[in-house]
Image 1: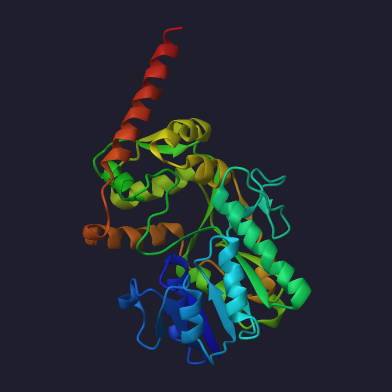
Image 2: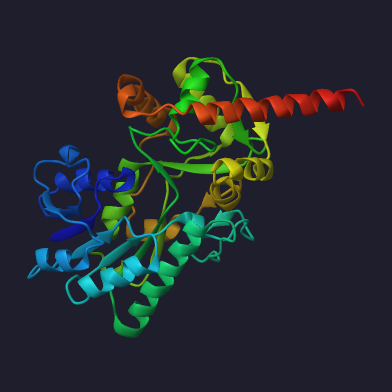
Amino acid sequence: MKALFIGGTGTISMGIVKKLAADPLWEVWLLNRGHRNDEVPARIHLINADIYNEEDVANKLQGMEFDVVSEFIAFDVKAVERDYRLFKGKTKQYIFISSASAYNKPAAHYVITEGTTLANPYWEYSRNKIACEEFLMKMYREEGFPVTIVRPSHTYDERNVPLGVHGNKGFYQVIKRMQQGKPVIIQGDGSSLWALTFNSDFAIGFVGLMANRHAIGEAFQITGDEILTWDQIYSTIAEALGVKLKAVHVSSEFLSEVGAPRGYDFRGSLLGDKAVSVVFDNSKLKRLVPQMTTNISFQRGVRMALDYVLKHPEKYEEDPEFDAFCDKVIEAMEHAKAECLKL
């Protein structure tokens, strides 16, 4: 069988590519601009192209047909409209990576299923994903375009440490704060529930949907089964670093307001996603992919990630601006506490 991945070297997609590289039944092609292709397994085929150059891509794919086309880097309707033009009649299945952040926040019930309402007034990213889903399902209903929707939640790998609050340069500065014995910000009171999925576990569910006729015209969320509070997540990271966690809990609304002038989109990433407790019901996925399970716990996965990060600091960027922002917010919280104690 033959698969084409648009992208293929990101956190989610690399786990899938590595899994398929070990499966002789699959012939896998990646279409991307060549970034990080040095990490791609040897038997994977590469097509160097910019997917946004539709004419060039059409020429390079001329005469090629696929059992599965997977789109990992489409973030607006124009992108999936382009894919529809490129792959209509040329693939038996088109898998679109949407997002679990597309679910309504807060949902009517904390247990999320594929039937949970899609709506996110806080985050344009999520609304764009919803619009992509709506276009693709319209093409499925009206023309039989063979779409499958996949909604990941918080997926990570050995190169990434998942956090709730960080700056625009990623998680690294928060890790440094922990190492330096400085307090770190956790949104809310740290008790909301969250699901974390290692990318190799995600790949099990995803590959099980590939070339699966029962997945056509359907949406599936793919997450691990382990549910943790944010306090547990940060405590596990601190334990793996061998340091004591110094947590300062700050409301997501406050972070959204004070972060906006500095370019931190906490309104989207927190109010539109991580501030709300979610527990994902993956029974629909497991009916088609019964082997889907959590093999890598967060306690193990975060140690794998930190081992890589601490050995390769050159791959990560420090963020003194965010560091100063944290200090300022924490100072303000301590001042407010002191003033209230005087009452």
